[in-house]
Image (cartoon, rainbow, N blue to C red; front, side):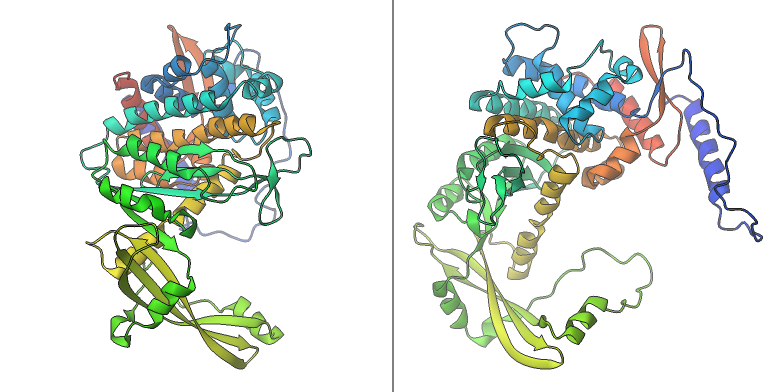
Length: 503
């Protein structure tokens, strides 16, 4: 970082702190705070600026990782490059999502932004129609080639991480519903919820929240349909970097025909299991001494004095209206050995017993007991820890939500199953770029904060930075004009990326 940068950042920080200081004693104000009225607009004749200043750092990171090269070497959809390469199309989709674009038409905004094009050294980028046509060129083989190109690039990020960073890798797998209102989208079907659309399969690495594989399927596909080959690919991908690998999924992914094979490969797993009559009967037959209270860990440490709990407005309304109210009274946990039908050996089955009291208004109707089961081959964790690890898989729901409404990868804007699958993979690259950027930041603690960020916060903190674009000495200079408290880390990361050896 240049010597002048800390001084500039310090001055900008001090100015904003003076503005926002809580020590200033205000007098009664006669006018509203936002009082500007004599506002004028002018067009700059020579200066060019963009509000996407962070895109330069992301693009530099992609170049250092060899992202465009890997895509062009593995993906062959264009017979001639007039004028675009495959990587131009893929990055066009990713950058559209990375800059907050919600649909294909938003590409046109960047296409007509001269400063944006100058910042990327591009004469032009594909228009929305050309981009849509590009998705229709994909077949299943091309889609797999694209995902493998991204995974080769991902490995360049993993290789430079400190030793032991992935001592215990958690692979999460789940399906979701991506609805569409379209009438002519081939490959769509009605889900079990009565929603028309598609049913993508997501395989992600919980440690970094990266999406490893994203596969589009018809809307009536069951959650675990065709998941095994993709889970095996993900295992092979992370095995060279992980000390221990644990597979996680809900009850749909308790594939008893595969458990012995995964066990034989040295893999661990924690899967939910349906509370069918056989295992419920086994749980009910346990002596009371086998059960112990389940103690839940606090979701986060309290940094200050504990505050008084707020009044439960919703519960009060439920009681006053006489709605049926199910209230958890107690939780306990136990375990026993259980051999699934298609397995040749028994595994640990951890069971959570929940006592639930049913109320209607002020009247207690009855009590019921519900059981929740988790099948695992872990031996070094006690039952409570297994339950906690199983519940941490729920963070994948947050990843899926970010794919849907953060990077808008599941809008399904084109016309068939594979083309929408290609759109998903290319748009979801924006989410992975965020994770890679955090993993490559020199300040590890701040980097992991970026990895855990929701996409919109990352967008406003490190991408939507007002910047003037200047050409000087064969350099493209992004001159940052604004300020936020992430800029120090932004410049440190840029210096680190600039010095990084290309992959």
